[in-house]
Amino acid sequence: STTTTTTSTTTPTESVVQKAISSTIQMLLLRLSSFVLTMLTKRCVSDIHTLGTVDVTLDLLRGTALFLGREGFRLAFGRHQNRHGRHGQGQQCKKQNQKQQ
Image (tube, rainbow, N blue to C red):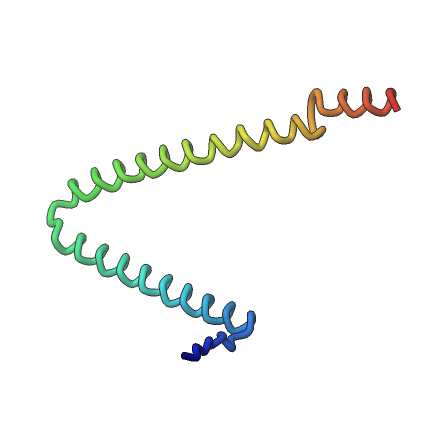
């Protein structure tokens, strides 16, 4: 029995273009669904006070989540800079290494 294998004839450029088109379509669908859900929420919620309360609560939740996510990266980046000579003891280590050589 003979088996044949087929290879893909797409070039890397075509692959990038396909991914870009797919990403754009996904982004548009996400924005459209977000718009539709926002409009439905505004139509269904008749009490404007409730809508304001939920908006403030969600804004505080979003702010907290962003702070917690960014703070870890900020601290890790600061430690990385200290170890690689941007600030603090990193410069001292470089000077000691140069003196020893």
